[in-house]
Image (cartoon, rainbow, N blue to C red):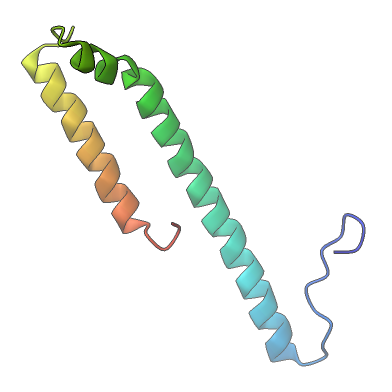
Length: 89
């Protein structure tokens, strides 16, 4: 890095330049995918943050059985998507 400029290639070999650019591009793409997945996890956790405490206290959940299964389905769906993008993690 030079100031705010990222210097990718110091060599003259065109193949090396291409490999460096591909590696940098791949890193940026992986970072963007990870940011999206992190945001989805945060949203899910924030939405359901109260549930573990209710369960720990032994109180009845303020959700119907259908809603509980929908939440489990959403979690499993997210887990599947995370597994599809496992190269990011």
